[in-house]
Image (cartoon, rainbow, N blue to C red; front, side, top):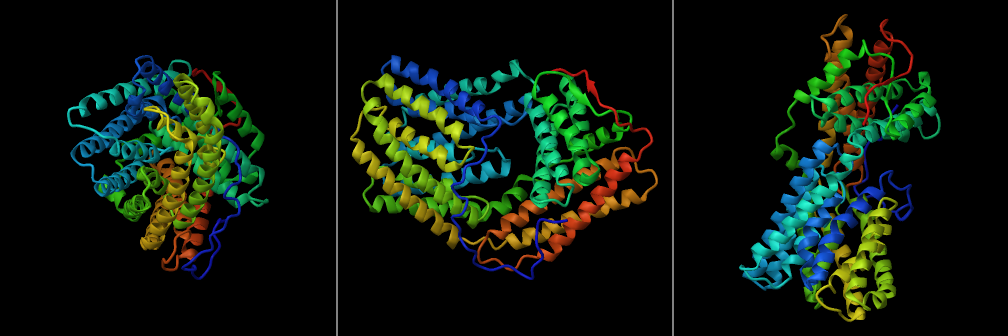
Length: 562
């Protein structure tokens, strides 16, 4: 029943493998959206600066323009808020960097401030779950701004450029709402149905059933998070109710895969891809309680920010230490742009050391390949400034289009783009740029990974135990409601979703802790038992729901259009 294997303990040091680190995945279904958005957000400000002969100011406009890369998977109401916060966060980081640069030119101080900024940006991006590209973009921009000569009188003007570009990026990010206003939530629901169908196809016992089930629950949980961010009134609430019924059907499939027709789920998912009507599951009368359960979740308050930040302390300390070490090492080697090493270190940190190692390998391979690509592109880009801008735009598109295949493949485009951006203020010797970037990449990766090894995450085992306890409590609550002949409206559905979320969090927490070093033995047997009993309770809840006499098996379409 579980993807975990019960073992008496875990090894304090785990093997760092290269297998699969560079393997290409299928591209994201919406790979073209961030790629096109980045070009649409970056091109107008850069071309305007080119027309005015002030391409040297492009770094400030790019600070705002690159905010368009975020929140493409969120419904538009939630996207508007997220993008606004991303723009404000970017402006805050740039403001700190510019003021610091205007007050001191001491490189050690600048690296120290950059490392602290990187740690704050990493913690905030992780705790808010802003999604890719995460902290890398604000860290790159703020770190680069630290090493640009500045005066206090120039800061307001440069921040104004960044803010204007940020407003444009917000408009670019929201523009698709004019064409398909319900696209993100329909897409999230379709992904949940497809993942549930993949698990149902295994009948719960076939090859790969454990990973398929974990992927299914993760997709369902992501769909719930998307739907719960929709407004509670108006046309979007009507759409949410229609999509909720489909997500519930995905949950039913995960709980009873042997009794599910995968083709039916796939047909519903296909119907959601276009702009037609949302399929109906034919069980509207019984869905009243399900919708009440969703409303109950909407009323629940999230944990306080300080409590959510607590578990991220080791990652934040790793980031600060690793970035500082990388920057200091670059300075010791006489490299003129220590922020390259700093950003390399900041980009490494993932949920655990094993994943951080994988990202380090991907970063080094991608950056070194990108340096070679720069050598091929530089002669063309140096022919004219307009070609320099166009090359950067093409690389910007390529980076976002390829990075979902594997991080290293996107880095192949990011690296030459970053090198070309440094030439906006004036052409430089390609050989020097390539050498400095290659050295800084290796230095940043080594220093960053060293910090990850030194700063241990000894709380990982405790968080697994907490996640097990939370899953047990959620299961007990659902079991108590199942024992009642007539639970309160929406209570069982809310309890079932809480249990689903707890099990998803348990699996993610256990997987994250399993990749840490030097931690105490994980309670693997408790994890397995909690997952087994939790999934049995979910299956029982689904069977009760399916056994209701007011539920039929027809399939109609909901008259809700995008």
